[in-house]
Image (cartoon, rainbow, N blue to C red; front, side):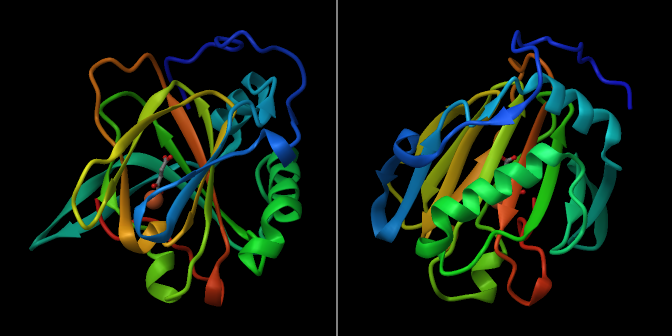
Length: 217
Ligand SMILES: O=C(O)CCC(=O)C(=O)O
Ligand SMILES: [Fe+2]
């Protein structure tokens, strides 16, 4: 894959690894029983992880139905179901750390991983709640590890009212929890100011071994 990405572009060289969760996680309650957790710098020396994922993951483009035609999904994707080998050992470490930290509260484990590659500011994901919420009426969590360019991560309540825009950086963790997939929506808006490519890794508990990304773009 050739992208406008240079090794060590972000200035964190060395072997990637996982930092502690514990007290470093900051929780922000949202309305309607939703919340988000933030842990900046969850992956340390994240450059090597970013570079490895860009080149090793079998990225593919998908199309989706829109009325009576199909359109290109504006980002590249890869999906790893429960039991499938993840594309980098640091992602195994991240999932183990997430399960140790959240397992009790989640009442289960993060199993699947969905990966998105936003090649530039023209790639995006439109407002949605993850499909995972349709499969379970109870609260759930989606943990997102962000790598590469900083893109605004937008959230808004479905009931109306003010939302928020988070700047999630290289190596940062964002967890959406509680009712967030049912009562709030999230998006990665298109931007003309984007500096380069971004990868997100979404860990989800998958009920019935299905994968729960956005319903539509
Ligand atoms: O890239 C992200 O951080 C969000 C992706 C997302 O919302 C999804 O795939 O469901
Ligand atoms: Fe999503």
